Length: 249
Image (cartoon, rainbow, N blue to C red; front, side, top):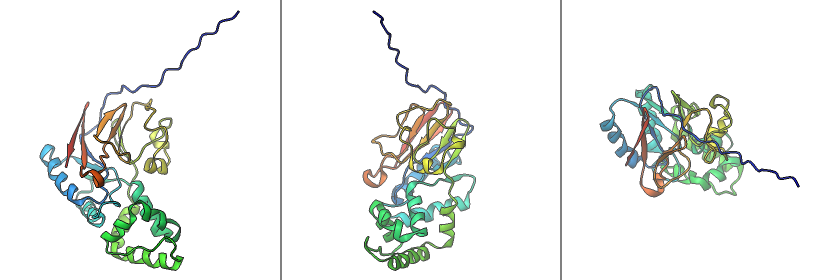
């Protein structure tokens, strides 16, 4: 009789030190809560004046002040382009898809918070069953309310920022691929293995997109999304050598 031993493959673990080339703040999903952003900005200034601020995306939808958030961030980045980095989230992606193809992309965006964004720009939305002509008219009104500069800025938002072995992105990354080989849609919308499989290249990933009760640093991932639109808590991660501290507003 033969006996066979079963060997279980150990799951990958993450033990790389946190070594950014510079300290920075990463700010979680704002989702139209300009009131919380206004409270968080001075807290960051008091804790570490002048360091870079990286916003992980999802500035719009669900909250009532999406237009105000976009205008504030656009003004901040225009004034200090080296200090303020704004990344694209999946909700910005939905807005841009709506601008490009209103009848096809509009109904979905409305269901995921686009109604609040439209209202913040004082534009009424179309019903899901509206004609293509009506959707185009609504798109044109939103485009006019936003203005060319804001739309151009949104279209040029990057999807990744990196310092040392720390990368900031919106939703997630394929843990099996180098960051430079990631598809933009993966960075903006996420990857099914991101939250369960640690990276093996020693790169820490700071992100939003997935709402948690408390911001945390675990297995090479730093989650900053505390569901601001629903919880009233907006979080920033202060990332330094071997340390992450969280500020809440």
